[in-house]
Image (cartoon, rainbow, N blue to C red; front, side, top):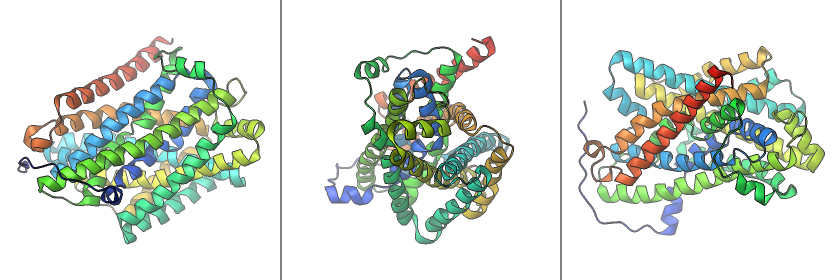
Length: 417
């Protein structure tokens, strides 16, 4: 087992605003996963079926996401190793392979959602058949990954942030033309469910927001972007910048997700067919005009393209850390494209596939979150940067809350409620 890093206390460094801006980036790449097509499907379906009922789930999920992503980045910066690498060092051969198997299942579910979402967007915009659209999205994502491979992470971050800006316009603009009910919005903050389907959607929304593959990835993103260092002053500076990075990125992502649910709740509730992305798009065009419909579809396309590239990056990080097998990003993209194309080829209902894929992600969250909280709280591993007691307990409370929602889903499905 590798030696743990011992870090001695250091004075708090100062960080100028310009310096902070130059250090931002990794969390914005991670945030793409929080506004992928799976989020679109889960949020629109929840709003169209249940109005503002599940708004509290999004608020809770985004608070958990801020907590989790900061801890993931911190582990990567302080230890100089990604979460999958730390796990790979501590697990025996068989447990490590089993753990990799569930993590790859999560990555595959993510990829299916992202490719399908991009395919739906191309169909809405240009009438492209879904299978051909999925293939097109796969090829386009290879171009984005080539940017990361040949131009470096900083250029990749700029491209992803640009796509994030497109997503913001695409998914938030419609809200300005449909006024949410303030009283109903406040009521939606109160935690409650209405039967099994609402629990299924809540689980899907959790999985779509607290993405397990990005928990693994962010530790690698932060480490690769800033480099490994044992200088306590440098680590403190990077952690301070990381708090701004995570806070800004996930406030934007959270606003997009909440806007989608509010749009569906205010403009699509009770309209036939709006529990699918295609039906929701048709209703948006009917209620808010074709321009908003096009902007929405463009946002969905940007979401699919950006998130599938980030998902492939995450899968490579997981495999490299747990199996010490390095597969080129472009080669991995080719391999992981096939399950998504298969789902599209057999004609499975696309939005339903998106929602179910996010439920798979929800069940994968504890496998990433439990070791993350343990590592981030370890004095032996993290030295002075180990989680404070309140942060440690917040991490465990978030983990237990997610597990309880998943258990509730299983019980309700078995009971047939």
